[in-house]
Amino acid sequence: MILQLDETNLIRASNYLATRDEALQKVLEHLGPPPLWARPTGFSTLIHIILEQQVSLASANAAFHKLLRCCPSLTPESFLALSDESLSTIGFSRQKIRYTRLLAEALLSGTLQLDQLNVMDDETASAHLQRLKGIGAWTADIYLMECLLRPDILPKGDIALLEAFRDLKGLEKRPEHPQLIEATAHWRPWRSVGVRMLWQHYLDARGRPLILHPPLTDS
Image (cartoon, helix red, strand yellow):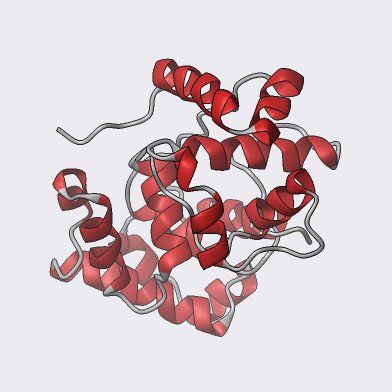
């Protein structure tokens, strides 16, 4: 059975990581355990995550809520019924219009089957998602972390994560992903919890509330 994060093991893992990493110990002492930041599985959330690619959380949230006002029952069918002009007005870039249409079409054709991810290991689930253009490593990682609640994910290229790590470790610049993998090896098998603790620090350092899910850029 594939382990998922929940409120109980999140707290246990936070305490464990605090004994393994001085920086995370400081975060825990100052802020307590991080939020679970769970998100629903499915098409709607994947659309939201694609909107979050390379933009601020506020911008992505604004576009997503506009989409929901236009399409309260957001399904692949209802999404494909929207015109490119409508999506552009909502806030979708030309590239993201293409990516999200490909996602909707893949779900309708069965090329992508999100319910199958539940029984796949992390590597297989990530590869299944990344077969679709527009879903790269970061998007797949965030889906695994926040929707499937996998406990040992280190999202590639997450700016908030990298900036928080740089700050807490006193580094001159943000690490590259291979460096981050090496530097967090001692967080296994709870890297998803370590990431949440860093997001928590990132928000606190900027005086931001612990919103539904954390910031994905520092813009």
